[in-house]
Image (cartoon, rainbow, N blue to C red; front, side, top):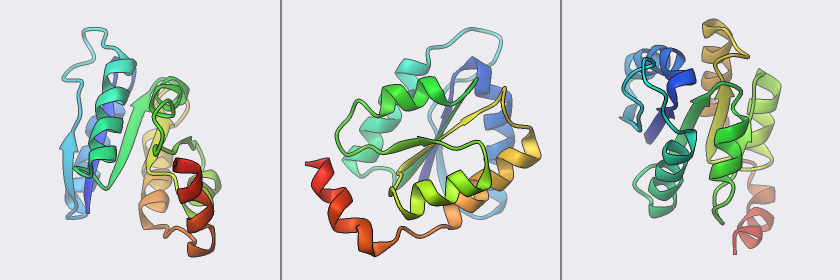
Length: 142
């Protein structure tokens, strides 16, 4: 499984921590910007790039981190076939993947601490989409 992880300047520090955890878990990942928290960067550009890569099949899943997770999700969800969910708790993360087949997880660095963010991401990555909803979700993507 290949996962993209991206952020704007507000999510940079949390993204860097997440990258270490994902690497330790042996998953293949791609860093989708930004490179520092010292220069403001656009959540729009990062979410657009992540969406393009997921839709092209270059990435299986994406994780986007900004201040709240909301800005990233709004941009990503403009694309048919992207189901970006803001989940700042474990239950929402699981349900977003299980029932809504979220292919991009959006989290808020100003909402979550590092340990909670790691639990949310781990739970989301380990959740399998419920196949009973697959046909419905795919029909919505058309």
